[in-house]
Length: 550
Image (cartoon, rainbow, N blue to C red; front, side, top):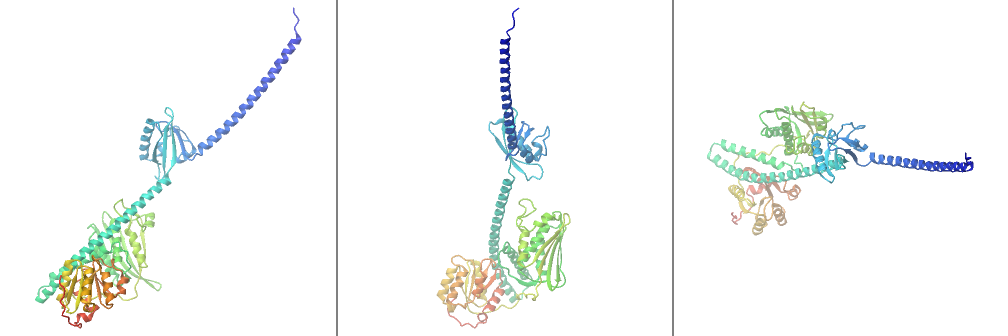
């Protein structure tokens, strides 16, 4: 038996130990590398998770039915999900009904497209949260959707559209103002012709001792028509207040009478004025417009009928006296939120196209112009009560100018330069003036009137009666021209536009008089007599110059 080579065994053993040491060292190095790689992987995972959860957009992985596989933290917040979505949670269940339908169609488009598709969706709830989604198909039934909140942009867009609508409403209102003014002017011209001829008929009937009943009814009808055109001219007016101290009981009564023409029989209007006068210094036309707006607003609050009550009160607060006007209805009433915004321009609770949202804003503006205040007391289902408080007037009530239509016609003498572009009005005015004894020169434009004035001479004209708006030279230019030649020459403006087309400061500077169409022959002659009594009494010298005819 051969003896073992211990020396060789020892050498092999040492080599084995060395190899084991080398393997151990390499294994330690590999372990160290694995630990570093794991640490780097953990760090990368934390960074990824941080980026995933805190990304500026929401991110959702889901299947083609919208079932959620995974969602980052921002997506969960955007969708209103607390914690982790349930196993069978879908994106649809967090959307409103219409957006659910939109998202279903959106997923169909995404499955058929090789590119991302987008849509705008609204979250379920109050409907104020909107977001844009962009979905792309990854592999198989794996879909990825990015979510961006666009509520602010959507709100800004809606506000822009609302401002555009308000601008359109304002433009429509401005156009309506212009149209109403033009219609009122044309109607006033027609009424002027009817009114003057009615005056001539009255005079003839009176001279013959005939029955005046029908003539009086004709005059009353003309006055009612004139009041209607006044309302049209006052619509949307932005002129200075034409204030007069008056008894508000009559002003309110007129607004109630006008409102009754537009209110159905299912609504009762009760007016309860107090027995004593209610004096206030107001622009009657503007205050009537404000009251009419309140009455119409009360009507609209009672589509099924009801009762509107208008009342007045004169009260004292310390040393100050106040006039109180109340308009109360038993309609639907309003919530606190609506009541706080009720006087804002363009705010309305009516459906689109049913109102401009300007009625109560106009009321508020008119009341403030009169140094007053307006409040509303209302609860849902218990109607509303609007209360206007105005300063009471200390001055006596203004006496209306007394005009006796049955008085004997006044006679006068003198030469009147009449400028009017409407032939029928020009003819009837000239006829009434000539019938009263005046010489009349008639012109169809401002330029023609200036030429006649130059031809006749400034000292041979006793009064200028002119329309305000005319082609080829208006009444203002005519007034300026004649006053350059003769500053004391009386000028009377006759207008169918109210005070909207003539500067009242200009009128005051030139000491002119403004008469609004329609005007009766008696009113015209009395105005001339008050302006230049020497003309009506025949003090002026006779002239041999013949009057110019149409």
